[in-house]
Amino acid sequence: MRKVEITERVVGKVNGDGFELFLNKDRIGEITFRNNKKEYLLQSGFLAEGHRIYKVEEAGEPVTQFVHDCDLGWC
Image (cartoon, rainbow, N blue to C red; front, side, top):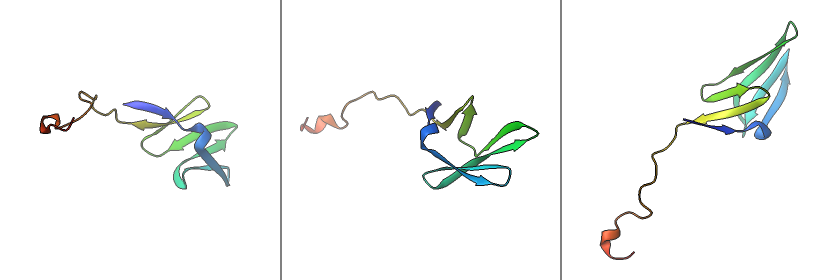
């Protein structure tokens, strides 16, 4: 699992007592302000740490070969 920082790409739209958060027009969560306290409510796959928002991605399998099927004689 790896975290990709997306803070600069997130857009907030005012909604009641907080903000709705969007990434590429997709709603990813909201920030609410109640009793002078900030609370992040994010969709699965997103994480807030400090003042940053991250997208959590599964780490892919490590690359073991540069090319596949090299036995075909073209590489």
